[in-house]
Image 1 (cartoon, rainbow, N blue to C red):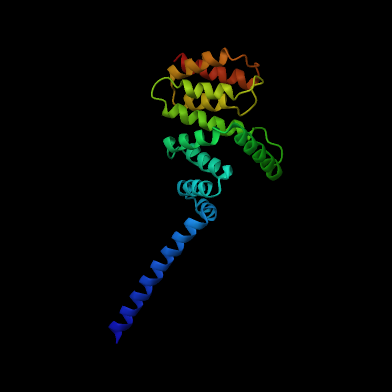
Image 2: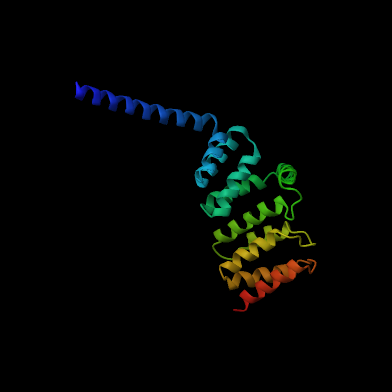
Length: 206
């Protein structure tokens, strides 16, 4: 009798586990946005990024593609995947601009006026990813950062993000190349510009 009870308990437990996994799989397929929020709330960011991408594939909503890219790029989980998702996000200029405008409004509504632009943040991440993946000169990263940085050299622009990334790696050759491009870029000599130029000069001359 005791063996029968134990056997029945194990069978019940096994069925429960199978059903739980089945339910998890079904939710993952039909509601990846909910799974994204759940996994991110648990600190499982890499998994959350993949669920965000699944939701983008399901709904074609660029918000989720951007979210997936941001997580991969900011945390350095997978630069190759991050680069592919950035290129996909960036390729439709009008759609990307609309997304950035929408996100700016959302962020302002939630947190008030922001010093940094969302577009500058995303493109800065994209430039850093391209720099980390660059096998040789990193020209693509420099070109992207400069093309998306206004002459007023606003705070949090892509050039700043790229310069900080290269400076952290103490990449003298790249910093020298970026410095030359920045100096030829016709930017206003704001406090941020002068600080970045000083940082790049310091690394380049080491």
